[in-house]
Amino acid sequence: MKLIKLTALALALFAAAGSGFAQKSASDGIAEYRALLQDGNPAELFEAKGEDLWKKKRGPKSASLEQCDLGKGPGVVKGVFVELPRYFPDTNRVQDLESRLVTCMESLQGFNAAEIAKTPFGKGEQNNVTALATWVAAESKGMRFNLPQGHQSERTSYEVGKRLFFKRGGSHDFACASCHSVEGKRIRLQDLPVLTGNPGDGVGFAAWPAYRVSNGQMWGMQLRLNDCYRLQRFPYPGFGSEATIALGTYMGVNAKGAASVAPALKR
Image: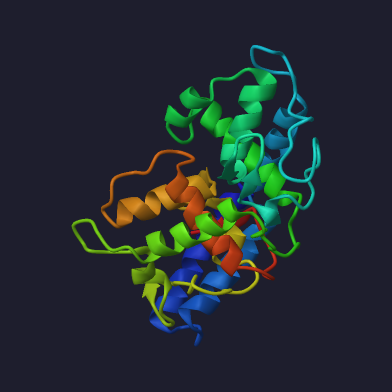
């Protein structure tokens, strides 16, 4: 009920911003909308579920994820989110939070990583991956991004991500840069952040995972990038693909120094 009332108030704010009634910019109206909803952010439900999943014995091996190494050693959660994607020696690849969680689900719990990767977003174990990612991200809220670039694979991932960010294609000849490389662009009532540099605290890469009020779904970065490709009229990338992880590396390195607000609240 609280969420319904706040959503109604948010719609009123949008109307005011659009008509000029409140004598404020659309960006100001959206900022108020998010602030009003933040106290009842449904992401908190996903956080709670994710923490439970982390500690619960599941899968063919009936084991928890409490020995999962997300980059700072087995079981360490705080601070890992703001240093991902990064290189992991055991898989010999750069991984983001979601793909690394799937690796742990396979190695520690016995789940089939390939099957999870093929599962649609929001269903089955993919839904659990999103909840786990939401909780892990929340454990680093307020901390500042500082992705490692010491390993050659990390530097390569950044360069690949940079090229993909500016690569144009699809029926509309779009690239990520079409929306996120020039100041002053917007879609509907929302300003589009420039992601070729540090866009600021809680903006762009520093805001996901996030709860989307418009469709009542929790989105991790893998789904966010998947939907960006849809909007560009590109084929969907595979879950945890080198392409999506490289884009995450590019945006994450560029966001160095920005404070994470994930899990955030989005339209």
